[in-house]
Image (cartoon, rainbow, N blue to C red; front, side, top):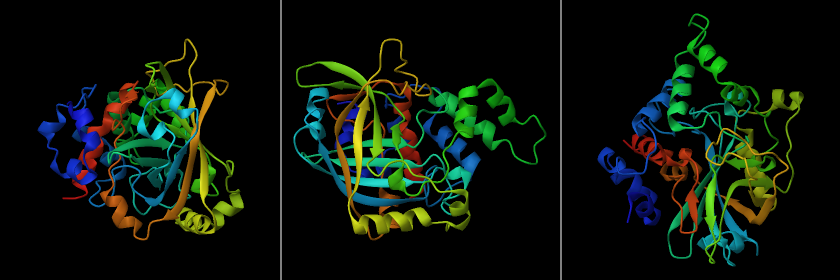
Length: 332
């Protein structure tokens, strides 16, 4: 069994604390950058984290369930795509690797939504999404280069800064940084997009490719400028605790399918909104955990922790070892 499939059956604690740099070398990492170098680059931008994550440090953990649709099993034989509801752990987050960042700070976008599906056989599979359709770069090496350029720039650095130079040559990354949405009314009023493409295989052996979309049943809603000025630094966690106490929060879970010519292995290129989508179920969030700070510190979401029936289809999936490094550093 490969390392990639082996950690599908292991607990977060087992993976996070027991995997060494030597273990990580055997993961199917498709880049020159090491996992530690990628985390170091994130620390260069946001500062070294000793308690929280290197990125998406501030968040809140919730629980619920995933109710698959009848169409889900036609797409994949994955356990959570069959005709049974499965429990989920959910973590909403702000983007920056800064635990104290205000929810209205521009560096809080894109927001994150990470899902851990607790499968019937006792194993888990994870999904990581954010509130922007696309990624700033195509590969892990390019992501490290972007982070180093950003972290090496600032008010005291003469123009053109490394960031100026990088972004001038990389218009997609520039658009990503400059096109973020305003602060939302709630974590529950944003659409989230998977960073990656996946290959799906159903019980009949039929395969297809797709990208996840998680669409709020409450619709996309954002604060006005006046509301932003009045909002508290932690309004998102406060709001969603109250929202879920009143009634369950629901998202429609979809897979967008490509057409010929669409780039499957390049996460920086979004597919047009006109592409067909399949509704594969509903994500229902029913409660906020009581001690979110403790729970989320011990959670480890891995992009390539996937069950049979779902496979990576682009190179950014293989950033999982960097998540393990970040986990280990916040538990030193």
